Length: 495
Image (cartoon, rainbow, N blue to C red; front, side, top):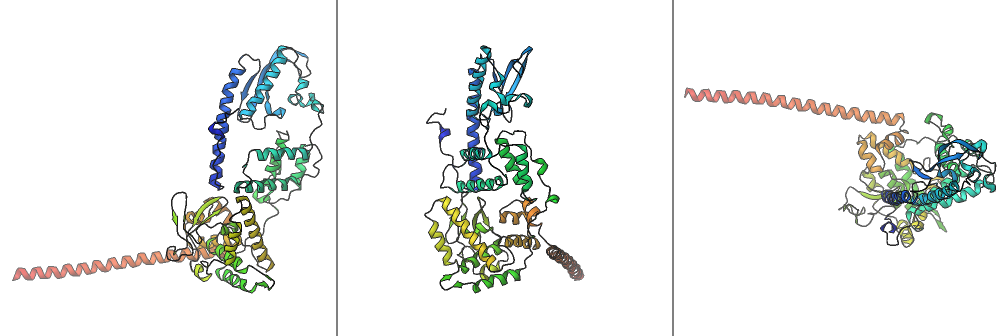
């Protein structure tokens, strides 16, 4: 047990960002490892005179001892050294922890006493028996249903997650749990006992979409938790060319089409007794088109109307201040990662769409949620983004708001901007930028990009030719000057 004043009991810092969460996770794992190392060192002293020893590998903790009885408890002619994994008893689902070591020590002491008293029986540990020797109902206990296992799995899930229910991270953890439940619902009957066939059927029911592999991982995690440690979902995983249910391809958007849709917002003012927030939706639309933001990033801007200094001490002037921030650099947060968006494209849209004029509805919304917990703030922002998407669908928009992000990426590549800068501006990796966001790049965009590149190359060649011509002209002028100087020198000699 830890001491009350043990520094490992202190709160783990987590600002809710992706990097903050990753750092907090690493600190938590380091604490678990330190506790485990102490416990593992202590068990060697505790079990020094015991016939049962502990053994560990990458995945589990096992018990080792000399067995004098066969699986049916009949005596063996010569003892056999056995190794039995702790998780086979359902007592060590997280093996490399101090608690797991304590449980292993307790079982080791229990078996050691039975061995010394010659009262050891395999019937007391049926889950360690080969399947042909295992009783149909181990221990006489009623086997758990899937519903009971899911309840236990949920408790276990939250035991390793953020405990502050008011934090951003708790909101994200809750969303991930709800995602798990969506996959679990493909299990037809939760009153049945877990089996390979039950989990296989659940995965088969899931459509052959890009999410099938995620479903395989989640279902496998539950199956292993239920004790089916050898369960594999590999046979149901899909390669890219096996995906049958695909999302509609991202449609190519021209600048003129985006501008036309932007201008239509003013027509959708709603009714007198129920006015719409069209100015807010129009502004969010313009911000996404100009900066390539994800939907939620528009509601996470730190330097919108005030100065902001990041963790590294970099100062970001207010976006609305065109004098101090002429390029319109924005500091936002997306998927838990904070970053600067520094490539508005085209820059003219900042003024054309009047993006520096923040709608009143935006300020009203931010004032409404500023006193709420981080959890409630994230929830309200998600609801606001859902309303934004609903507004576009209701008014017949032929593409999603997220499509603006793809359009921005394709357009930026067409302008010849280095992929490293585009990826940094959009807040993802170069590999993600090229594999996902360019996969929707149609023939027209490819030809436009090629045309731009060819013109750029032609301009460079013209510049090179022009430079060569200027050098040749200078050479000629230099030769003429040399001739004139030579004539002057000869004239002076004659005089």
